[in-house]
Image 1 (tube, one colour):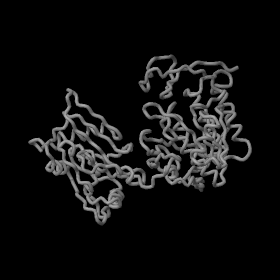
Image 2 (image 1 turned 120 degrees about the vertical axis):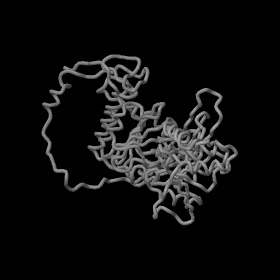
Image 3 (image 1 turned 30 degrees about the vertical axis):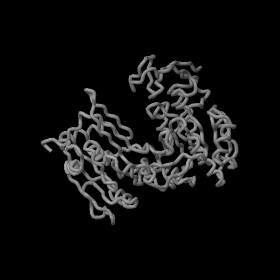
Length: 465
């Protein structure tokens, strides 16, 4: 007969400890360890599992394999991030802040697929059926043949999905509200989230249906519950953006059937989420071309070139320890660029307060933004506005050099398409140029610093520059 055994699990990282503690030793979070009950004893141990096992057939690595069957939502931004549409038999986890638009996006995708003749089931665990219908009416998709239910019991959900024809797409909103009777803990705990996600993923593999699971995020932007949920599913998408702004970014961080660095850009309007086919124009729409400290960076998000404005403000610090505030970029990368400017270029900047922002809410992760950040910092420090038709990209090395980056041709062509005439970067190859664009090549960061500082009101360069 099975016995009940208590374990203590961190709700932030999933670490298991034999006793309760105020602080998790694995992730360092406070007051996240919760007691949960597990079943053990006869029928739950490894001996029982070994007795019920059977040998499986081993096959060679080479052989024919079928391409993944996809269902296309006809939403170009969503399909781009997914790699061409939802893969049949896959499980996708969609995370994002509350109110960012996860339910809106998925309800629009569900209505689009249902209108194509696909069987789509939308199961809401957080909202009543009337609330979902109100959202559908506001989005203008109330007439789409989407099958709707409000349920949180996993066994009931699976029994409903297995009844009749297998659905093409199943949306579970959200996994934190689901619970299974096999676990004694409350809904939303690590064990409940993990077990529920495992059951839904198993259904997707067995039935061939595409299952989409919505997950909340914690205050630091991670999927609430254990990170092992991300390992269970085939794709993980994050819905990002500032709720005070109108545009949203859908970013793929894991995809077994496509690229993991694609983004989709949407604009939140009264009738739902609208696709943005040209995000560069959106991010540069409100740019102040005459202000110092503003540089345009030509970046790459997946296979798409994206131009974005990087804003920097260098101000005298009244404190003994200068402040560093970074939004949308790696703060440690900023510290490295500042150190290179101080040591290799002779720029006295470390004693100032530094504020850096990537306009539009986009998060830049690639080192190619080093040159644009350095240009914006020097522009703000010397009060020298940069040319309005110039873009910057290039990696800055610790020796003060400027190194070339990948996909330079895509960056240059995107700049030319949007009307920019000057590109500041490292040395380019023969096939990485575009007609109508002048390329200013730099092998050392000090050369760019000197050119910008010469046009400014202040002279930040030391005697050793």
